[in-house]
Length: 330
Image (cartoon, rainbow, N blue to C red; front, side, top):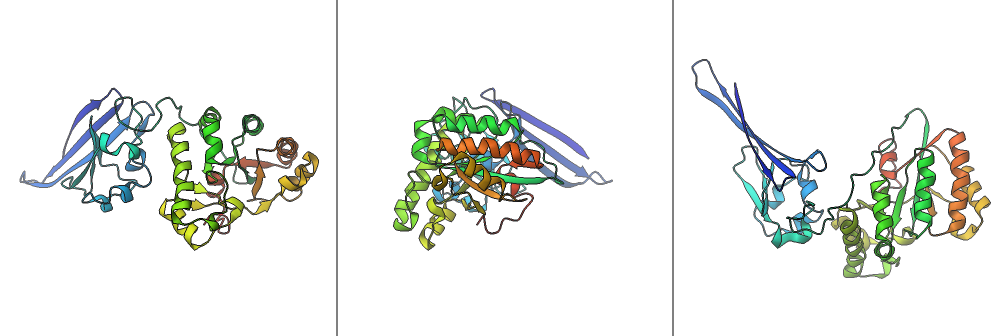
């Protein structure tokens, strides 16, 4: 068995490794020859896959390129070159797809000043999710309609006090207003989802209208964080066949809830606290809004009480790893 490798570095950030393996029998006849590629991002300390290099809709946008349909998002047989990304579609590394950066700037996720892309280059890697004790109760508190100019950062501080996380379902128009807050949410390890651009009833829009609500919000969040939300909470939780199809075509899941506090109607911190605490259960997905100060006042009291009762506070993504959530994630 013989193993050899070649290595090259691109833009002082990306390492390409080609590992070659040859196996011979006792008669010195070659019986196996394979190559395996690895691309490593030195800045983020991570092995790269297609998902790290291209945005969600690459198959749709690049449908005219031969072989694009064979690529899986977790494919790691890739090479980062100075002007293009090369993706190999077979294990023998004989078939490949080449994607030029400059011609596909809107699709490129690689964050480097030398690579044409809308991805930001000054975003820190998110803080890791806290460890969860599976023997204790967990809830996901989800906050709609933000970010808010003061309440969102205050909410982050409240959850971090209990080593917890939450999920923010953001409106694109507010993301555009408060990019620094969005960046802080992301870097602190909180989950970001879409809540449309400006909160219309998606059932009243045509295909193009729904698509614009989704794509504009995705683009805005990506330009700030380099991350694309994987979930969307439709305004009012309302969908029809058209909006469901457009959501799915954009690679998103619908994220609903199973505990609605109706904080917007209560408008009282103590009542909101009671609505959260009295109805909380293991596996709850709790709906509140971080645009209301009375809600965050109630949340502060609720977190203290739930913590005393042994609850852990997690993102919706983390909760989905412990509960099926069939009626929430669709």
